[in-house]
Image 1 (cartoon, one colour):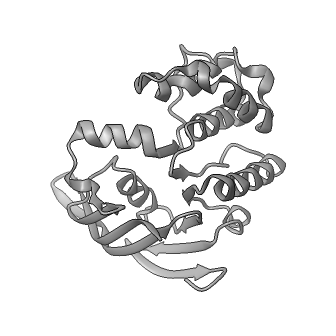
Image 2 (image 1 turned 90 degrees about the horizontal axis):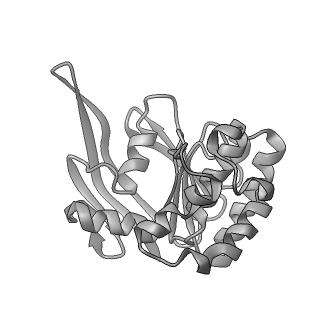
Image 3 (image 1 turned 180 degrees about the horizontal axis):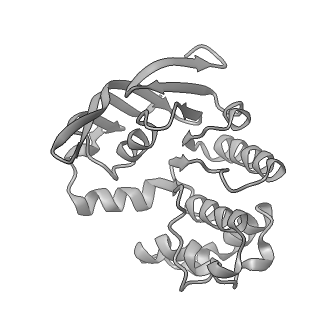
Length: 230
């Protein structure tokens, strides 16, 4: 079953008065309980595509269907609620707040939804333990290494068990061993919770965990590779 469907997505940026078309009539489907990897050269449109998938960016044309709803037509408030309830983000720049400790950063999306964080404390502890930062729950972001900060961002994205996880270079600050551990953890979580994952990465070893690899070139889908029939 399709969870997300892109119909004829195009996008352009205006730079110093000139327009640059970065995505050109993209048509893609993302199914439930699968891991997708988007690859391509720098500037090919990968991150723009990911931001459109999550409603952070509205395309100049085309539809983004989650279920049967075109999210490009949603108001900002409805789109914000959808992002908080159904989509988990692992940003390349992490977007962690330095004046909050690890636990507070992880609970922030729940507080924005006015949920009782006490109901999620055990799940948070379990995530921190699996990500090997269980002793850092009260530490502030400045006290963590880059890899530890990355794991905090991962835990924040996973805590609410969203339907979709969007990840921009999710293992970028992790060493090879922790990258492997994280990807194995993500694959297992995807199977257990029926979560779909769409990630952008340059790491071919990370891409091996994907069910489908989508190669983007010059704003278009160059080719797709599936472990099984697409």
